[in-house]
Amino acid sequence: MTVVLGRIPPRHDTGLDRFAAAWAGALAGTSYVPLRRVEIGHWLRGLAARLVAAVRSEPFRAEPGYEVAAALVEGDFAVPEVLGRSIEIISDRLLADAGLSGEAYQKRLTRLLGTFAIGFSWSLHDRTLDQQEEIRKAV
Image (cartoon, rainbow, N blue to C red; front, side):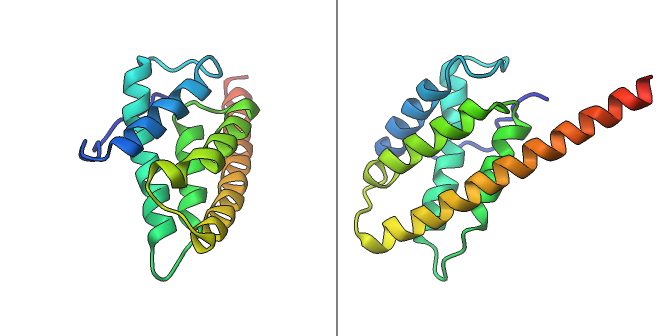
């Protein structure tokens, strides 16, 4: 599957731009996707914006973490290194680059990262089962 860029968020938030560029750098070399690093950065910026919106949401819902991780797997970022590197960079940088601080945001981010890990794992699991089914049908 190929990463679909879709709608790219407006380019007015340089903090998210920096975050997305760092995330793209962290994922570089982990997966083959037929996009240039800057295109991957634009796509990741959209995913980062979804995470930031989730952290800010009232009432808070952690499900977007699941959805963002599933989008990574769907976009062919589907190896364990992607999960580890993504959690690390999101944990280390997302709030600061988005201009958010405080214990409440940190707690929300922690919950979001929990659903992110679950979403990545289940999406990878489902993808593997789908691939096995395709092989079975081909045989």
